[in-house]
Length: 286
Ligand code: NDP
Image (spheres, rainbow, N blue to C red):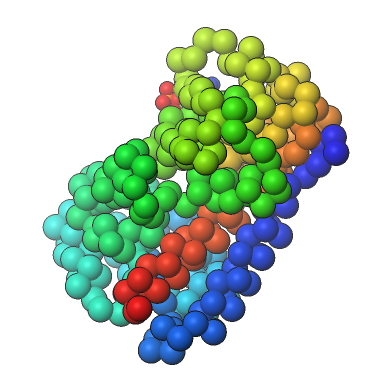
């Protein structure tokens, strides 16, 4: 099993197929299909790619999607008006606010203005508060996708030492919370840029989740033999190649299972967004 690659692409496809089946067959969706509204401000090229990938995935799963593409000159008030409109729209089940926003806009104020009942990205403070307090709710898609991967490949989590590298509210912090939640029961360490003994911490981690955004930063020699390595990073090198935060070929030799980049966590993030949208629609249509 040394260096077994985890195909997030395949696991995400299985989940998307299940969702499609659900949308086609469950009674509540006879009224109408689930609908995701994506809000994008400006023309940041990676955001355009992510939003179009999400819309394509929606279409394949039988989920309606609509893009609200606002110009980069949009004011905070105009953005909030758009989010309010979607909040009140009876046929919209999920709202995705594509980040980052142009620098003149406040992301935290925009997220706060969203309807928490339609927060399928799981980033509204209410959703994050529910995660913190152990209540059911929308979970942020990337860490939720990682948990789905670990569950699908049957990683035994309770009591294991999980190291999460990165403390963003989108990935690192919710990842740490999900791994320590009842049921997962890991002993979690969260590292960040000021952490002093990263190689030693990595060597003691049974589960290592790298979300620091630094190309191939985590060396193969830092990996505990037999560890499960989840590489969340997406980094574009000057030559155009996309790599993760982990030095993949070296880490493969020591890990028992490892996600590649691309084709690992990325597809899971999209699949979890669809799952949250279908769950939201089901609740609203039931
Ligand atoms: P952020 O830049 O918001 O956060 C990066 C975190 O890594 C920060 O907490 C930072 O610490 C920490 N960090 C930076 N350098 C080091 C270091 N040398 N050692 C330890 N910790 C360090 O990034 P995101 O969380 O948004 O994203 C992380 C990566 O994941 C990016 O590559 C991004 O593209 C990718 N990503 C992938 C997704 C997917 O679907 N696969 C989805 C979302 C993100 P500090 O807080 O101290 O600055």
